[in-house]
Amino acid sequence: MNKKQILLLLVTLLITCSTNAQLLWKISGNGLAKPSYLFGTHHLVDKDQIKNIDQIIDLSKQTDAVVGKMEIPDPATAQMKMLQAGMLTGTTMKELLSPEDYQLADNEFQQLMGAGMAQLGMMKPMLLETLYCSMTFMKAYGMTKQPEAIDAILQKAAKENNKKVIGLETLDQQMDIILNSLPLKRQAEILMKEIKEKQKGIDLLIQITDAYKAGDMAKAEALEKADWSMTANEKKPLIENRNNSWLAKLPELMKSQSCFIAVGFFHLVDDKGLVAQLKKAGYTVEAVTL
View 1 (cartoon, one colour):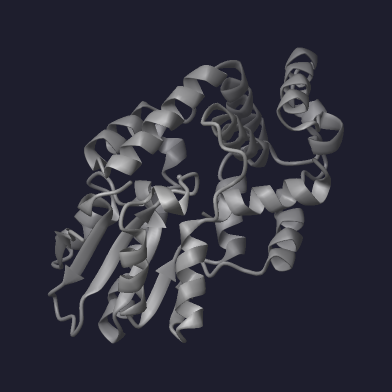
View 2 (cartoon, rainbow, N blue to C red):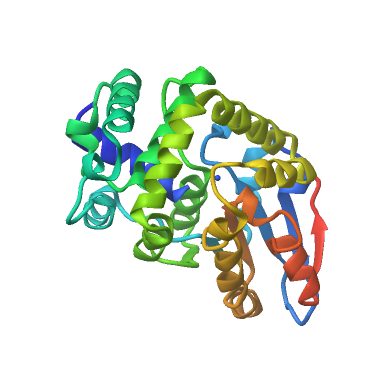
């Protein structure tokens, strides 16, 4: 796998953590002239595995705007920004890891993708962790290629139908949150924990994916809390803080137009998730059956 292929895969993984009504919600009331919708996505699930996906896409076309974590940029722009944000400066993975851990990481990545630390050692540890977890899962799940992100499919359909596409954050903001929320040394520790407990991580991702396909929010919430790789406080910038930032923007967006909001499934679950928070804000949020 060459450098360009690695970057393309990483971009896809970063912009996108069968289904039933618990993945699709209608938002109304609280002064809204037209209803909006909220849909949970999963970047490691193929479009064809999502029940009623064509009807979901058709529903998105009926709204005025598709809203996502961000407006997905063209690949060339994404690669350039990835290079800017994802590369280490002033240090390397060899300096962040012990000699034993560096060799272990090198062996694992060589076996996984034919590129070791000589090629990847200038990438930030959280970027490598994202790549490692996703590729080990895909291999265990028998996937031969990265699925096209449902977020991208929805945004493409919106543009083809002359609908607005609105991002709740920029690519720069998203990469800063993912890649810079933790000190590099801690990022390296998380990466090595994932490598040393690979099967445990694969099993957890499989359970999360199965919960997503079943639309089981309660199970997904329990599994997210069972994720041992990061502390609850370390996860806050990735999920809770972003939910709060988006919730500050969504009321005005929904007031002026009907929106189809598609964000990662974990942003919907628990009492800090978008479903519970929108209800708390006075909206009527109802599960949709197609």
